[in-house]
Length: 225
Image (cartoon, rainbow, N blue to C red):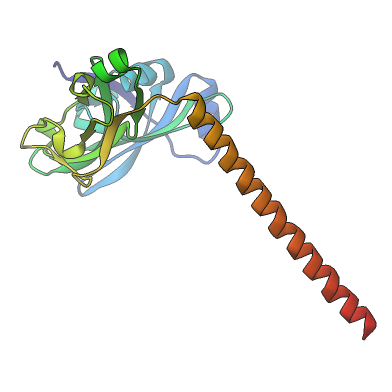
């Protein structure tokens, strides 16, 4: 895959400048690296959003700052506005090609499970991202999980089942389940579940009443004294 290029401009790290940049359509951020001081930069919001969608946090990018080559970087973090969901800040890390890095990689589910299609099973996904460790040149864009392996109810795919290159170290217990197929819920299952919920509610209410009664007794004793 061709290495993507991202264009940035230097910015002054002033206290109130970030909001003004966002109004102007830029996203403020920093770039840092091995034995390098943090450098404040800005990138056009539309460009950064497009790059993030294409690259994610596990793809090497060629960074240019003020039309000068800065080297290869990865997106290590970004923040979004909780109301508008727009990107308001980002971090880029300049990598050393001879030093392993740790980054997040998204899980992509492909194919179709015969247990779901033929037996009406329910697909249960437990993870959609994993941390990996590797050299920058060995970075992968995502981890594919083939659902066609799930042929029967209770079949599952664990971390140890992933077909990853030897150069990729996944920093998760090999026994962790990524996806499984469970039996479909029957009317009896739902009825049993409702009964358990009601029993739990009654038990909680009973405990609350006991606590209230104990509190009333304590209050009466204090008043009698």
